[in-house]
Length: 342
Image (cartoon, rainbow, N blue to C red; front, top):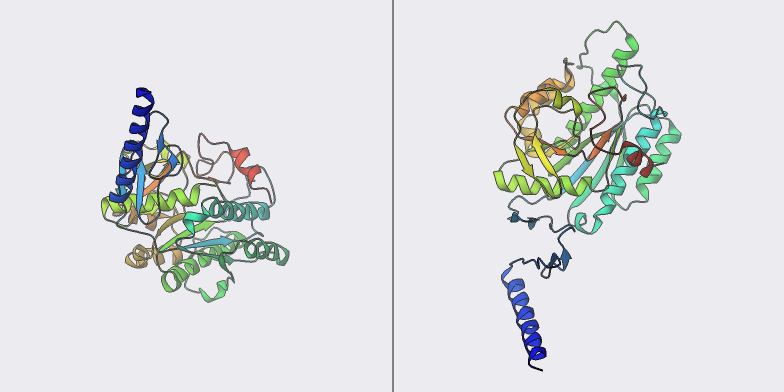
């Protein structure tokens, strides 16, 4: 009888302690079963709350001092051109439209995966399209109209960007495609500066995302920005070509992924409007004058600002299988492709 009374007493004290911790804002964990009674979650679940706190076991809690207000996802699409400057086939060797559709599918799935948390911020999807088939645009519109997220499809008017200068390739078709690509990039930066409020995610239409990608990027942005008291750039891809260089990297713990600092990326990245404005002239230099490599002005920005990429990758860049700018190592490419079937 005494033993039963002791158990009841211990349970009462435990409940009282949990209530006290909840009142004063402390988080505790029962290491016997890895359950967090304050959050009412297991340790392997998502423990972070956008705008408030980020919890990494056993590192503890990071108070968010840089909450995200809104996210604009700007996707540049073109279902009529396979690869701008190459004749090689992409991984899985499908029509270009299939990569565009699966990219959009993966973005939608990622937004819906953590919908309850992501509902706390304003999200908008903008499509900047160049020369896609009418049927493809109808499909894209149908996909987005079913999501409940605000969206807009913009038909690119590339002729208004007469200032763009491309490198002479002795191939008018490739040069025309490159000018259209640069026009789309220019338009995306213009929209980011004039219409967006906080974070902007620039996405090319051959990046298929894991379902946890968006929340991981946003929660990691809040966490690291709060820790270093600075804005930053986030690339969702673990590019293989960066492992060909002997460079030092700073390692960070994000929400559920490790992240490392990188000095280069391609043109799918997330950043803040304040950094877009701060480096406006550099970004215009990249979108109006073709460089070799193309992203050179962006890489010069990374010499001054932190850019991080995930380990392992959060997205698959669907380029040629032999390209070092493409498939990230140590991820199941086929599964990710199949999960986002049109």
